[in-house]
Amino acid sequence: MNATLHIHRAGPAMSVQDLGRPGYMAQGIATGGAADRLALLEGAALLQSRSVLPAIEMAGMGGSFSVTAPCRFALTGAPMRATLDGEPLGWNESHLITPGQRLDIGRANAGVYGYLIFAAMLDVPAWLGSVATQAALGIGALLQAGDSLMMHADPDPMAATRRLKVEDRLSGGTLRMLPGPQTSLFAPETLSRALATEFQRDAAANRQGVRLHHDGAPFPADDAAALASDFICAGDVQMTGDGVPYVLMADCQTMGGYPRLGTVLPQDLPKLAQSSLGAKLQLSLITLDEADRLYMSEASQLNTLMAKADVKIRDPHQIRDLLSYQLISGVTNGDDLDRGGEA
Image 1 (cartoon, rainbow, N blue to C red):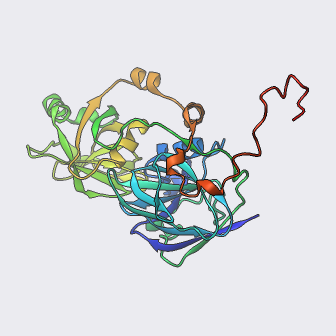
Image 2 (cartoon, one colour):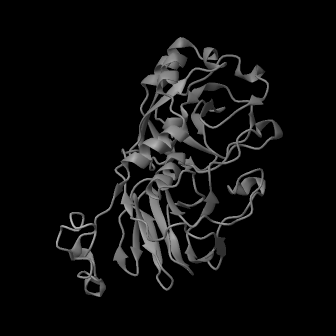
């Protein structure tokens, strides 16, 4: 049966996100969607869903939730302290919540964006084929305490829960970047210096973009003042008027006039989105051939992740209500098949 999700507490900038609205940049609408798209693929894998499910994106702080029907959920992205009726929950795992239970999610222990993804798909209004919130454009609204969201039924609430081992993307690192039409506006020595610079994630960061801080000289571009506004997209590394790089993210504008050093590969944007304040980041220029070899479609990524999501075996020592389980009725002599399946 269908269910309702009740939000009893909501952190700032909590929103519903999916993979966004590709194909509408000409109409001035950025793709949008989750800041960490990989987290949504991981959630689908944990719930063994062949399609990516809408998620509740939590920026730095979670919330408190309850449901009116049993359903599974996955916790992915930036790990946050999570409990179900006071019992700790593992991150990058799926779990079951039933009516009367309270799911509480606190602050992020690392990273920025945590994701709560239900197998009982959120039934919220879609626009242009997506339920992604883009508050700056007036598409949807941030979630608040007291909100309730309708949900479809979980197709299999008693399915095995799973866990997924994920690679670290919370500690900064290298952002691979393709050259673009304006890369040549930067003098060779300026480009070399930018690639050799160790940046830090700046406090000026949100779903529109992330400023890369450094203590050295700025990175000017030749003839930047003569540039006309051009289309831009997530991953573009704009060099602002003060010569500081700013990497555009999911909710960036679609037109801009700043010179672009290059474009960060889509598969490296989750690493940037999840980099904490002060995390060290470095740009690396690669060729188009190298980028082609690295490319993997999100459908292929999901298939790979689904195969890696292992069934979670619960430790009996951690099952508070172990004595309430029926542990005897399934015992057999072990020769059922030899005897034609008779007990």
